[in-house]
Amino acid sequence: MASMKKSEVLKIVGQNIKRIRLEKGLTQVDLVGRIEARIDTTNISRIEQGRTNATIHTLFKISQALEVPLSEICDVYFSKSV
Amino acid sequence: MASMKKSEVLKIVGQNIKRIRLEKGLTQVDLVGRIEARIDTTNISRIEQGRTNATIHTLFKISQALEVPLSEICDVYFSKSV
DNA sequence: TTCATACTTGCCATATTTGACAAATCAAGA
DNA sequence: TCTTGATTTGTCAAATATGGCAAGTATGAA
Image (cartoon, rainbow over all chains, first blue to last red; front, side, top):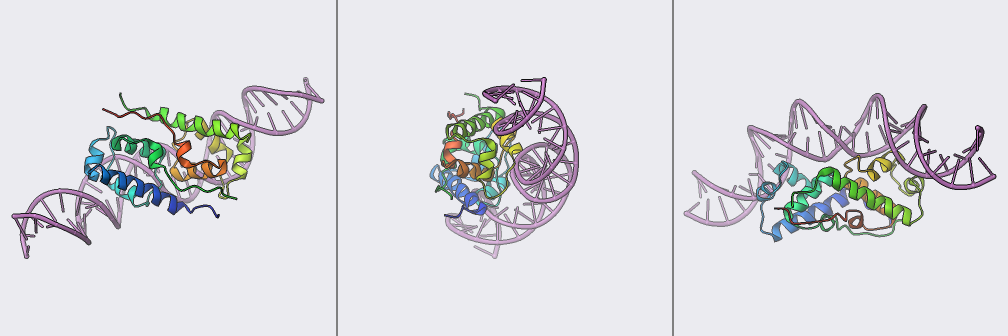
């Protein structure tokens, strides 16, 4: 399989975040409120939509706010490239 | 528990990458050779050392080269903050 | 319609990642 | 020692993530 496009990966990660956030009944504002270091809903929105190629540290902060392992957010379909 | 410091997260992710790469018997040069889109050993080195806060797409490319799920690279110790 | 809440989008400034190359360092052999 | 391969480090330019704020959009309730 051809390697997944960048936009696809970002989209899946964003969907993961949004899904978990909604499962927990949180708004974007709630979420950023749980994060010690500042994060703006602007960024959450862009990340959830897959418009931004977030850094691992940002995703980690989000995972902490959602109280899930970082790896859960990073659960992207995988196939051996070649 | 206080939230994990940024540098710690990056270090753990970097160690994960390095460990998996070595388990597969690959050099950094081998690794970048497996990636379609260019990546330099410069970046691999800095990411493995936790000196760089890599983006999720870069980590995804690395995960593909290592033939492991992205989530395995992102396996960072988790604890409920607060 | 009006209002409130939630989310998205546009823009800006700053910081940092990334790709690239060269040079330096390190380790293991011959 | 010398050489080779592997990794690290420095520097640079270009691209982009981030934080911040304001304005726009969407939805639903009153």
